[in-house]
Image (tube, rainbow, N blue to C red; front, side, top):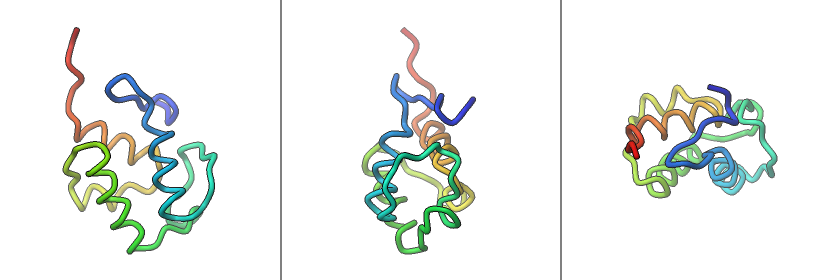
Length: 91
């Protein structure tokens, strides 16, 4: 699944994730989803913690710290959130 195709609850997560990262890292979008959060966008450890808490609050999920640390792109974060939300209900 491509970065732009990460969809949960019928919506693409990348725009929301981009906005969160832009607010926290102070690096304006647009993002492709492939940028490295730390090397390219300059996210620091305190900002990463803020991002983790913001993701949990915004999407109503509990994210595993170790899994979160392994996510280095917006696309991988979107996938982690999607997995934490569980399967979409079938119509």
